[in-house]
Length: 265
Ligand SMILES: Nc1ncnc2c1ncn2[C@@H]1O[C@H](COP(=O)(O)OP(=O)(O)OP(=O)(O)O)[C@@H](O)[C@H]1O
Image (cartoon, rainbow, N blue to C red; front, side):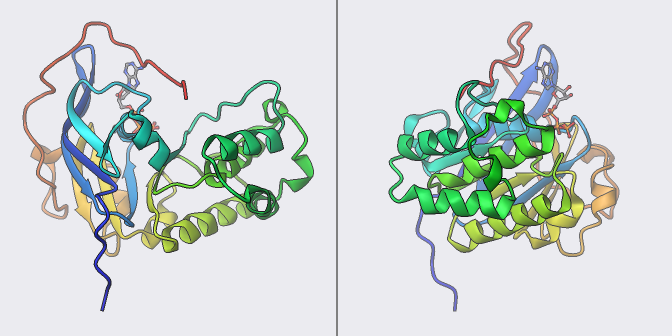
Protein backbone atom coordinates (compact mmCIF):
# COMPACT_ATOMS: atom_id res chain seq x y z
CA UNK A 1 0.00 0.00 0.00
CA UNK A 2 1.44 3.37 -0.91
CA UNK A 3 1.71 6.10 1.67
CA UNK A 4 -0.34 9.24 1.21
CA UNK A 5 1.89 12.22 0.40
CA UNK A 6 0.25 15.26 1.93
CA UNK A 7 2.93 17.74 0.88
CA UNK A 8 1.96 20.67 -1.33
CA UNK A 9 2.25 20.00 -5.06
CA UNK A 10 5.83 20.32 -6.26
CA UNK A 11 4.61 22.48 -9.12
CA UNK A 12 1.25 23.99 -9.82
CA UNK A 13 0.59 26.33 -12.73
CA UNK A 14 -2.52 28.13 -13.84
CA UNK A 15 -2.58 29.46 -17.39
CA UNK A 16 1.17 30.07 -17.17
CA UNK A 17 2.37 31.49 -20.50
CA UNK A 18 5.20 33.29 -22.22
CA UNK A 19 5.39 35.29 -25.44
CA UNK A 20 8.28 37.13 -27.02
CA UNK A 21 6.81 40.05 -28.90
CA UNK A 22 3.84 38.50 -30.67
CA UNK A 23 5.34 35.03 -30.78
CA UNK A 24 4.06 32.60 -28.12
CA UNK A 25 6.93 30.54 -26.71
CA UNK A 26 4.63 28.74 -24.25
CA UNK A 27 0.85 28.73 -24.53
CA UNK A 28 -1.18 28.87 -21.30
CA UNK A 29 -0.42 25.71 -19.40
CA UNK A 30 -2.20 24.19 -16.37
CA UNK A 31 0.18 21.78 -14.76
CA UNK A 32 0.05 19.88 -11.47
CA UNK A 33 3.13 17.95 -10.44
CA UNK A 34 2.59 16.05 -7.17
CA UNK A 35 5.32 16.12 -4.55
CA UNK A 36 7.86 13.39 -5.17
CA UNK A 37 7.13 12.93 -8.85
CA UNK A 38 9.91 12.44 -11.38
CA UNK A 39 8.92 14.18 -14.59
CA UNK A 40 10.67 14.23 -17.96
CA UNK A 41 10.04 17.07 -20.36
CA UNK A 42 10.83 16.49 -24.02
CA UNK A 43 10.18 18.27 -27.31
CA UNK A 44 11.89 19.53 -30.44
CA UNK A 45 14.32 22.46 -30.39
CA UNK A 46 12.36 25.60 -29.62
CA UNK A 47 9.34 23.70 -28.26
CA UNK A 48 9.33 25.66 -24.97
CA UNK A 49 11.09 23.40 -22.45
CA UNK A 50 13.64 25.96 -21.29
CA UNK A 51 11.00 28.68 -21.25
CA UNK A 52 8.84 26.63 -18.88
CA UNK A 53 11.75 25.62 -16.64
CA UNK A 54 13.11 29.17 -16.40
CA UNK A 55 9.73 30.61 -15.47
CA UNK A 56 9.32 27.96 -12.77
CA UNK A 57 12.84 28.72 -11.54
CA UNK A 58 11.88 32.36 -11.16
CA UNK A 59 14.50 33.68 -13.58
CA UNK A 60 12.17 34.47 -16.50
CA UNK A 61 9.11 36.66 -16.12
CA UNK A 62 5.87 35.01 -17.35
CA UNK A 63 3.63 36.88 -19.77
CA UNK A 64 0.51 35.53 -18.10
CA UNK A 65 -0.76 33.14 -15.46
CA UNK A 66 0.58 32.06 -12.09
CA UNK A 67 2.60 29.20 -10.65
CA UNK A 68 3.83 27.84 -7.35
CA UNK A 69 6.75 25.68 -6.29
CA UNK A 70 6.07 23.57 -3.18
CA UNK A 71 3.09 25.86 -2.51
CA UNK A 72 5.06 29.12 -2.83
CA UNK A 73 4.71 31.66 -5.65
CA UNK A 74 7.48 31.29 -8.24
CA UNK A 75 10.31 33.73 -7.69
CA UNK A 76 9.53 34.14 -3.97
CA UNK A 77 12.24 33.50 -1.36
CA UNK A 78 10.32 30.44 -0.11
CA UNK A 79 10.10 29.01 -3.63
CA UNK A 80 13.83 29.58 -4.12
CA UNK A 81 14.55 27.91 -0.80
CA UNK A 82 12.53 24.84 -1.79
CA UNK A 83 13.95 24.53 -5.29
CA UNK A 84 17.33 23.83 -6.80
CA UNK A 85 17.82 24.86 -10.43
CA UNK A 86 20.38 23.26 -12.70
CA UNK A 87 20.54 25.56 -15.69
CA UNK A 88 21.54 24.57 -19.21
CA UNK A 89 24.03 27.46 -19.11
CA UNK A 90 26.39 26.98 -16.16
CA UNK A 91 27.32 30.28 -14.51
CA UNK A 92 30.13 30.61 -11.96
CA UNK A 93 31.78 33.24 -9.84
CA UNK A 94 35.09 34.21 -11.47
CA UNK A 95 37.18 33.99 -8.33
CA UNK A 96 35.70 30.98 -6.49
CA UNK A 97 37.03 27.45 -6.78
CA UNK A 98 34.68 24.49 -7.15
CA UNK A 99 34.96 23.77 -3.44
CA UNK A 100 34.30 27.43 -2.55
CA UNK A 101 31.19 27.36 -4.73
CA UNK A 102 29.99 24.29 -2.87
CA UNK A 103 30.70 25.89 0.50
CA UNK A 104 29.00 29.14 -0.50
CA UNK A 105 25.81 27.46 -1.74
CA UNK A 106 25.69 25.01 1.20
CA UNK A 107 26.09 27.80 3.75
CA UNK A 108 23.61 30.04 1.93
CA UNK A 109 21.03 27.28 2.43
CA UNK A 110 22.19 26.61 6.00
CA UNK A 111 23.22 23.06 5.18
CA UNK A 112 24.78 21.23 8.11
CA UNK A 113 27.56 18.72 7.58
CA UNK A 114 27.86 19.62 3.92
CA UNK A 115 31.54 18.71 3.53
CA UNK A 116 31.07 14.93 3.36
CA UNK A 117 28.21 15.33 0.94
CA UNK A 118 30.25 17.73 -1.20
CA UNK A 119 33.23 15.37 -1.26
CA UNK A 120 31.09 12.44 -2.27
CA UNK A 121 29.44 14.48 -5.04
CA UNK A 122 32.84 15.44 -6.47
CA UNK A 123 34.01 11.83 -6.18
CA UNK A 124 30.96 10.43 -7.93
CA UNK A 125 31.31 13.00 -10.72
CA UNK A 126 35.05 12.29 -11.05
CA UNK A 127 36.19 15.87 -10.39
CA UNK A 128 37.51 15.62 -6.82
CA UNK A 129 41.02 16.35 -8.12
CA UNK A 130 39.77 19.67 -9.56
CA UNK A 131 38.11 20.88 -6.35
CA UNK A 132 40.56 23.73 -5.85
CA UNK A 133 40.43 24.93 -9.46
CA UNK A 134 38.32 27.75 -10.83
CA UNK A 135 35.36 26.32 -12.78
CA UNK A 136 35.53 29.26 -15.22
CA UNK A 137 38.72 27.62 -16.53
CA UNK A 138 36.97 24.28 -17.14
CA UNK A 139 35.94 22.56 -20.37
CA UNK A 140 32.20 22.40 -21.17
CA UNK A 141 31.81 18.92 -19.65
CA UNK A 142 33.79 19.75 -16.51
CA UNK A 143 31.72 22.91 -16.06
CA UNK A 144 28.60 20.79 -16.30
CA UNK A 145 29.93 18.40 -13.65
CA UNK A 146 30.78 21.29 -11.32
CA UNK A 147 27.36 22.76 -11.91
CA UNK A 148 25.69 19.42 -11.07
CA UNK A 149 27.64 19.18 -7.79
CA UNK A 150 26.59 22.72 -6.86
CA UNK A 151 22.92 21.98 -7.60
CA UNK A 152 22.94 18.83 -5.48
CA UNK A 153 24.97 20.08 -2.49
CA UNK A 154 22.07 22.04 -0.98
CA UNK A 155 18.76 20.70 0.31
CA UNK A 156 15.75 20.88 -2.01
CA UNK A 157 12.20 19.61 -2.35
CA UNK A 158 12.07 20.24 -6.08
CA UNK A 159 14.87 20.21 -8.62
CA UNK A 160 14.48 21.77 -12.05
CA UNK A 161 17.05 20.46 -14.51
CA UNK A 162 17.54 21.75 -18.04
CA UNK A 163 19.51 19.72 -20.59
CA UNK A 164 21.84 18.23 -18.00
CA UNK A 165 23.50 15.64 -20.23
CA UNK A 166 25.02 18.07 -22.72
CA UNK A 167 28.80 17.73 -22.75
CA UNK A 168 28.94 14.87 -20.25
CA UNK A 169 31.05 11.79 -20.85
CA UNK A 170 29.46 8.41 -20.15
CA UNK A 171 30.75 8.29 -16.55
CA UNK A 172 29.30 11.74 -15.90
CA UNK A 173 26.02 10.80 -17.49
CA UNK A 174 25.75 7.70 -15.37
CA UNK A 175 26.72 9.62 -12.20
CA UNK A 176 24.02 12.20 -12.91
CA UNK A 177 21.37 9.53 -13.49
CA UNK A 178 22.35 7.99 -10.14
CA UNK A 179 22.05 11.37 -8.40
CA UNK A 180 18.62 12.01 -9.91
CA UNK A 181 17.46 8.54 -8.85
CA UNK A 182 18.90 9.03 -5.34
CA UNK A 183 17.17 12.40 -4.86
CA UNK A 184 13.91 11.00 -6.18
CA UNK A 185 14.09 8.05 -3.80
CA UNK A 186 14.75 10.54 -1.02
CA UNK A 187 11.38 12.18 -1.78
CA UNK A 188 12.36 15.09 -4.01
CA UNK A 189 10.46 16.02 -7.15
CA UNK A 190 12.69 15.99 -10.19
CA UNK A 191 11.83 17.77 -13.44
CA UNK A 192 14.26 17.06 -16.25
CA UNK A 193 14.08 18.72 -19.67
CA UNK A 194 16.11 16.65 -22.08
CA UNK A 195 16.80 15.41 -25.59
CA UNK A 196 18.39 12.30 -24.05
CA UNK A 197 15.41 10.05 -24.68
CA UNK A 198 16.97 6.95 -23.13
CA UNK A 199 16.79 8.66 -19.73
CA UNK A 200 13.03 9.13 -19.96
CA UNK A 201 11.88 5.60 -19.12
CA UNK A 202 12.95 5.93 -15.48
CA UNK A 203 10.49 8.81 -14.97
CA UNK A 204 7.05 8.58 -13.39
CA UNK A 205 5.62 10.87 -16.01
CA UNK A 206 6.43 12.28 -19.43
CA UNK A 207 5.32 15.58 -20.92
CA UNK A 208 6.07 16.42 -24.55
CA UNK A 209 5.88 19.97 -25.86
CA UNK A 210 5.54 21.09 -29.45
CA UNK A 211 5.57 24.75 -30.48
CA UNK A 212 4.82 25.75 -26.89
CA UNK A 213 1.89 23.36 -26.39
CA UNK A 214 1.53 20.07 -24.56
CA UNK A 215 1.12 17.20 -27.02
CA UNK A 216 1.52 14.35 -24.55
CA UNK A 217 1.11 14.01 -20.80
CA UNK A 218 1.25 10.47 -19.48
CA UNK A 219 3.37 7.46 -18.75
CA UNK A 220 6.74 7.23 -20.48
CA UNK A 221 6.34 3.49 -20.92
CA UNK A 222 4.88 2.74 -24.33
CA UNK A 223 5.09 6.33 -25.55
CA UNK A 224 6.56 6.76 -29.02
CA UNK A 225 9.31 9.18 -28.05
CA UNK A 226 10.65 9.76 -31.56
CA UNK A 227 7.15 10.59 -32.75
CA UNK A 228 6.53 12.91 -29.80
CA UNK A 229 9.61 15.05 -30.41
CA UNK A 230 8.51 15.64 -33.99
CA UNK A 231 4.81 16.00 -33.21
CA UNK A 232 2.81 18.96 -34.43
CA UNK A 233 0.77 21.00 -31.93
CA UNK A 234 -2.65 19.61 -30.90
CA UNK A 235 -4.82 20.65 -33.82
CA UNK A 236 -2.57 18.69 -36.18
CA UNK A 237 -1.73 15.78 -33.90
CA UNK A 238 -2.47 12.31 -35.17
CA UNK A 239 -4.38 9.55 -33.42
CA UNK A 240 -1.26 7.85 -32.08
CA UNK A 241 -0.68 10.73 -29.69
CA UNK A 242 -2.77 11.41 -26.65
CA UNK A 243 -2.99 15.20 -26.65
CA UNK A 244 -3.28 16.91 -23.33
CA UNK A 245 -5.87 19.62 -22.97
CA UNK A 246 -4.52 23.05 -23.79
CA UNK A 247 -6.26 26.32 -24.37
CA UNK A 248 -6.58 27.47 -27.96
CA UNK A 249 -5.97 31.13 -27.31
CA UNK A 250 -2.60 32.82 -27.52
CA UNK A 251 -1.11 34.41 -24.40
CA UNK A 252 -3.23 37.45 -23.71
CA UNK A 253 -0.74 40.06 -22.57
CA UNK A 254 2.12 40.52 -24.95
CA UNK A 255 4.82 42.95 -23.87
CA UNK A 256 6.50 44.81 -26.71
CA UNK A 257 10.02 43.79 -27.66
CA UNK A 258 10.54 41.69 -24.58
CA UNK A 259 13.81 39.87 -24.36
CA UNK A 260 15.02 37.17 -22.09
CA UNK A 261 15.71 38.92 -18.85
CA UNK A 262 17.96 36.80 -16.84
CA UNK A 263 20.61 34.49 -15.87
CA UNK A 264 20.75 36.11 -12.54
CA UNK A 265 20.52 33.91 -9.51
N1 LIG B 1 15.12 35.66 -25.55
C1 LIG B 1 14.29 35.27 -26.50
N2 LIG B 1 13.78 36.14 -27.39
C2 LIG B 1 12.91 35.74 -28.35
N3 LIG B 1 12.49 34.46 -28.50
C3 LIG B 1 12.96 33.55 -27.64
C4 LIG B 1 13.88 33.90 -26.60
N4 LIG B 1 14.16 32.79 -25.90
C5 LIG B 1 13.47 31.78 -26.47
N5 LIG B 1 12.75 32.25 -27.52
C6 LIG B 1 11.88 31.45 -28.39
O1 LIG B 1 10.96 30.74 -27.57
C7 LIG B 1 10.70 29.46 -28.16
C8 LIG B 1 10.94 28.38 -27.09
O2 LIG B 1 12.33 28.37 -26.79
P1 LIG B 1 12.93 27.42 -25.67
O3 LIG B 1 14.32 27.83 -25.42
O4 LIG B 1 12.01 27.37 -24.52
O5 LIG B 1 12.89 26.01 -26.40
P2 LIG B 1 13.52 24.60 -25.97
O6 LIG B 1 12.45 23.59 -26.10
O7 LIG B 1 14.19 24.72 -24.65
O8 LIG B 1 14.60 24.40 -27.12
P3 LIG B 1 16.00 23.59 -27.14
O9 LIG B 1 15.63 22.14 -27.17
O10 LIG B 1 16.61 24.03 -28.40
O11 LIG B 1 16.77 23.98 -25.92
C9 LIG B 1 11.59 29.34 -29.37
O12 LIG B 1 10.83 29.66 -30.53
C10 LIG B 1 12.66 30.38 -29.13
O13 LIG B 1 13.18 30.88 -30.34
